[in-house]
Length: 383
Image 1 (tube, rainbow, N blue to C red):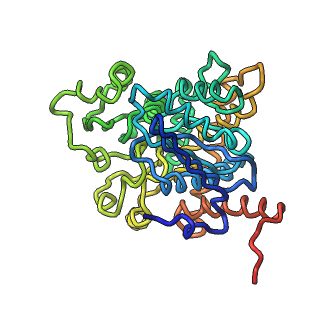
Image 2: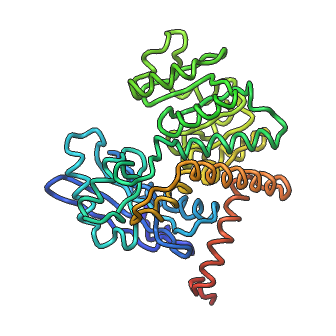
Image 3: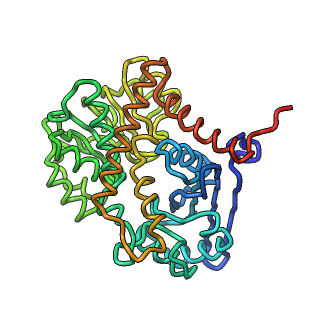
């Protein structure tokens, strides 16, 4: 077991709160990583496998993500150890909110992540009787419809577009493979298809599909909407491939948009894409990134490419107590502009300095957080 006390560094985490509820069996954790640039903000995820270490890693990603897009919130993340398909989900979410009533929304505003829906965000608001307790609530309650707008996927697609344009490659005809055909993956595919890209592989938790001649994107988007992850079962037998093979098919752009650490050194050796755009958080290991760079594979880092949700959350945070909804067009325009700008900045900096894009992005974010810590008198005292 990782001793989180030994993992604390100059950045954080500032606070780790574990909660439980005997009646519902709820177990959860909140990690506030760094609040130098603002109050803690990051999604809340639910899965049977959630760990404190996992949530701490993701909270750190949020610290860098907020700084990278230059918005004034701090890194945080929360997790609930439970089955998101359980009939007792609402009771578990309510118990989680009650146990963290002293933290939400004073130190942390709940949001959406894996296993959590707009309805769950509404339940948190209801349980704490506070519109400010969560963002990501249904549009009917004044929320920003993240999934309907596809904000994160829209940003991932724009990051891919910016990287391709920088390399002098047209998006039209570009072959893309997407691991994780969920909210992020489908929005990414829809936007890139609109721009003329060709989808050659996709996957869900239920399986993987590949067709080198291109998949019918409108058909697959409709199947995903109707059948969820089980849509892959509708594929022709010749299109079904082994789970994970979507990462190594012949393509131009690979978009891992599922879980963390899916591309390690062994998988990296088999990747055939020339560009990887990280739709998920932490999908590549450090060893994989080094191996891919040695082969000339360019990577747009996660907290640059998938920051669309954070940018939209910035609008949602401002609107929590407002009677007016933010304009969807303004949100998408801001997601596109900030994501494209940051993608180009990071890739150019990496090329000029000879470091990996992740290092360039991290240095940019660290400088912004360090300056905020300096101004607030939070920097470590040197002996």
